[in-house]
Length: 148
Image (cartoon, rainbow, N blue to C red):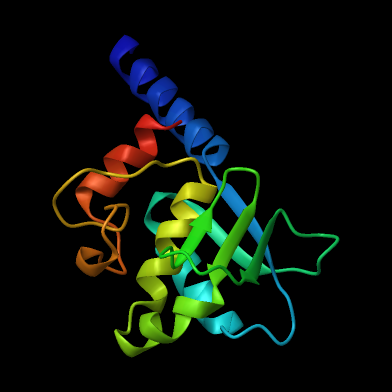
């Protein structure tokens, strides 16, 4: 009986933890940006395996805002835990040419979720965009849970 009760407690604790560890991102994409809402949602969806859900929202209802900026620096995009994901319009054409839209936006959504860069290797949160994948690797998942 004690073993059955123990298993039931672990089961219910597990369910509670899973519910608690949901991250709902309500994403605002300004009309007329050079990237599409589909690009943005594909990047955000990369985090679905760890319980992140993404939906489009109006500006006032969002907790994440994706905007373009124009700088002559080398960064393709930037993300912050405060909810802002910025995409550099001067380098976006090269991102599209290399078909890295989902990987770049997924990487920046990782920063939005509080995950830092991973050194070396291949993964969504690798600092070098040329070796990023548009899906999570085991290293990305580990970094996500360590950031919690």
